[in-house]
Image: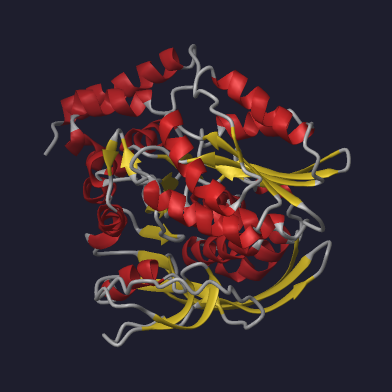
Length: 472
């Protein structure tokens, strides 16, 4: 229990630091929350979270967090006043948003890379969310702060963000067995709204085995949609749940995609199920963004107080969507003279595969792959990356260190060179970053190929965004 005086002093400290931090770079994204925590202690955060009369919704996952959060916020705008934050990896960003914004609902992206720094069970206890949204869970960042982070621990950290919930709704991707199991295991405690695909038009030929998150045996897939996402079952009894929000029809055109989405979800504020059917015309933005569309619509239908407006609001937002909703640093295809150049981060195999599938919409000739490698202790990431590279079968590969170790990057290159004689290695140092960006830009601009994909590891936003700006 935190005394009223200590709590008020902590709030005042956060407010003062907010004003001071505005003077420097960054706008005080984390610092006010850190100051509040230091003065008031962790338990004061629990008291602060009560300022949100309705509660908080946390969005997490390996890929799609920022896009889902962005779309969810667009949908909720005008329905209710809310506090928000993006790309959080610490509780202090959430605290800063609660301190400095107004609204009865919180919409907070929360990335978790490991148990130690993510403290997911502590975040759940202190913030006491009414909702946790899961996008997808795949291997990522096997080294955190120089320490190898096993995938089992990474997955456990994601699970812990909702494991202690005793109220509210978990929104989760039923096509992903890892996120689906989180929902299945919490069905007795809270409401679960699943989302997924209910079509046969999207098929991934990936045949790599996927472990059942429940028992460890190999899952049996009747269909793969995207990497490990699909229709699956296991002899232990675990199987894909039926989606509450589902894509029931899709029409792929060169200039747009037409989606039909049907929903029957539990709305938290109305304490009842609501039904809807929407018909959307969106840019040809990739299969991964179909999932982001489903997750954001499910979150919106779950938490909007204006349930009667779900159909009109969803259709208004998505039928007027442009590609500006893609978060900074994420994969985009730019046109430079006669070249189509796909640029963006791919820090894990799932993201790189998504980038490759998006790029393949444009490829109509020989392809060059400019690959930025993982680092030491990230061999699992390289293996997933290399599967994607081989599936694209590029005519030429340029290998560049994506993180700090040039020596490790060269080891990865030697593996690639065995299968691709045309591969070349450039030992670009990590610093200065502007020189690396300049050289990567030069590779693409001076390439002899009209179709180029540049992806892999690197700075999650700044490097990729700067490279994109070089093609404006």
